[in-house]
Length: 229
Ligand code: SF4
Image 1 (cartoon, rainbow, N blue to C red):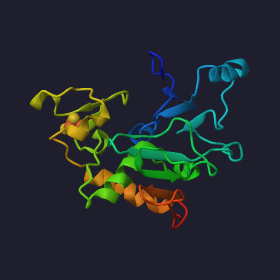
Image 2: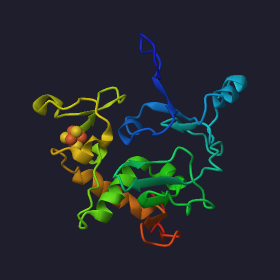
Image 3: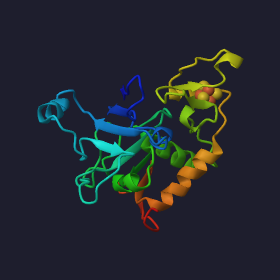
């Protein structure tokens, strides 16, 4: 939802209801103020409605607002996970993982990466794209078809950052607003190498655990090299 006024007297604010995907990086970096509300069910909104005030905490994340020192409350944030299935479909489970359950592997997965959400808050990472990028890098020499439109250089956002579309839709008669798993069978897929490289660079600043099919459930931990700038 975009809050704005006809006279442009006030800076706009996006209110994002986060059900499966968090705000895209481009939108966060646009400088527009964003209130992101992770929702597991609509009743969670009652808490905000009854209170009448939105404060930054695990139930409402604020981006591009001026923070007063000492009022940011981020305790209790859990871990993100990206899962790549044998079918080559990938997803971030809607229930965030945590340090007690991240070793419970999805029965059909071939790859999982679990990572530190706190790191995202200081150096923003889109968990879905990050997961795809690391999976792509992990399997790039193994002849495993790791593809998603979010990794394709022809997948772009519209000017309002509300929808993604395939730039080649006119040229090759493709579906404009295709689902991102269209890439699995798309002959025009072309990896967005700068994006993949950027996410691999980001991985240096994030503590994460990688598990591949065949490993024991613990996977392998990678600790971040240094604090994010
Ligand atoms: S449909 Fe094909 S060309 Fe278009 S963004 Fe997806 S992978 Fe790329």
